[in-house]
Amino acid sequence: MKYRAINFSQKFSLFKEQWQPKVIAEMNDYQFKVVKLQGDFIWHDHKDTDETFIVLDGILRIDFRDGAVQICAGEMFVVPKGVEHKPYAEREVKLLLIEPRGVLNTGDGGSERTAPNDVWI
Amino acid sequence: MKYRAINFSQKFSLFKEQWQPKVIAEMNDYQFKVVKLQGDFIWHDHKDTDETFIVLDGILRIDFRDGAVQICAGEMFVVPKGVEHKPYAEREVKLLLIEPRGVLNTGDGGSERTAPNDVWI
Image (cartoon, rainbow over all chains, first blue to last red; front, side):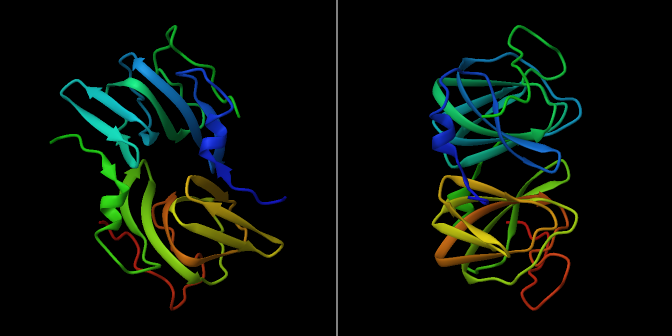
């Protein structure tokens, strides 16, 4: 079939590992990535780009140095570029991330939490 | 509250009109728009950009000159730039559109179906 929709649930069924974003589509030089998160991430920022979080299942909290936002399924949030943030999820949350190709999950500072980039599923 | 998630259902509750995309967020020079569609649109393309459709409620069909794709709630599809397409929905469908700021709903050729651009909700 030449034209085929991308189903989020089907993509999430293909992997179990958390904190490892998988690319499912591209729009111009932007990528759509699915990822499962649970627990605490590290503080980081993305100096050159905003980053979009769309929650598909569960509840995500993003901490900022001066506050926090809770994002439930059916909600989205755009973290402005250069703003330090730290994702957190008490229970596993399923997300769609949208950001330019090449953006690392840990931002500009690499770390042991840096996931392989540009992994398609 | 300084940081606040954007809730799709809440945004859709604010308007009834179909085929009139409303901007709910920006990421760099891209916009997220919610829109309600029903019935047939016109053939058009976007010469300079891909266009992303995420279906939040209902079923969208996009016709191409050489095929079609059905996109259900929980699915997405990226229409490549320059590819002629025509959205269709038998019953009302609720969509999230993602595309660069300034893109018209009818593509490069204006028409009576051209919606006001950059309307925030």
